[in-house]
Each structure stands twice: as structure tokens, then as C-alpha cells.
Image (cartoon, rainbow, N blue to C red; front, side, top):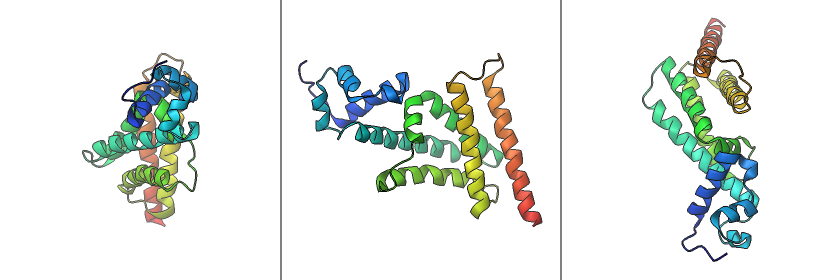
Length: 194
């Protein structure tokens, strides 16, 4: 193999993203990436410090893209449509970038300030959505955990082909999100009554 002229970190990350999105995160190894780029594996070390560093870069990229997609829809929505728009953006990201989505789901190293900051940006956007319902403190955290669980559960089952009946998945998704919205409103009403 001859050296690849013009190979840089961005090109390498793009190739790794394509592999992860097409074949899953586990398919991205230094050997498979080198083969895709038509270079020798040791050449990758000019750009990344091994597979953990590459996966970290994929997670950072995914968190950045995820935050951008959430910000774009949240600036346009009001009321219940805010949570609906956020949920649709979450699902769209997971469908468009299944490999990056998988990279984002892995727990970050608690000592990695850059990754923690990128994750915090996404979490702050989810909190912003939940706060539109007047939830604060522990109630907001519970609701954030709830919507993450609902959305990740749907995405996971869909990715594994677990929805086998011939019904429109987007209708199911809308019903799921609307049920969560009703639950958040009930939680808010319960808090107001106490």
C-alpha cells in the first residue's frame, strides 16, 4: 500500500463515522479503518492514539452533531411541540447516524473534561426542554431520565428489528411521546398540588 496523501484527522474521522454508521461501532477497528483508507495500520497513529482515542473522537463528533440538531429544532418550537421536536430530532439522529449514536451512549471517562463538556451541552438542551413544563430540581432530573429512557428504548428496539408488526412506527413514536408529555404534565400538576 502506498501512503495516502492528504490524510488528516478529519478524513480519518469521516471514514470511521461511515464505517460505524454502516456496520456498527464494533466494526471500527484500526485494521478495518486502515484497510478502508488504503493505508497501513501504523499510519493511523499519526492521527489517533489507538482505538480508545478513535472511539472518543467518534463520541465527541456524535455529541456535537446531536447538540446541533437539537438546537436547530428547539429554537423553532413552543409548548408541547418543543418536546415533540426534540424527540423527533433524537430519533432522526439515531436513524441517520446509528454508529455515532452508539458511540454517544457509552459512559465517558469521568476524568475526560472535554467529553464531559460535550455531553453536558446535550444534557442542558434536554433540561431546557423539560423546564418548559415548569419542572425544576429533582423533578426535572427524573423527567430528563424518563425521556432519555423512552427515546433510547424506542431507538434500541427499532434498531434490533423488534417491532415486527406491520404498523407505522412513526405513529407509535408519536403516541409514545404524547404519552410522556401527558405524564410530565401530571407530574407538574402533582408538584403544584403539594
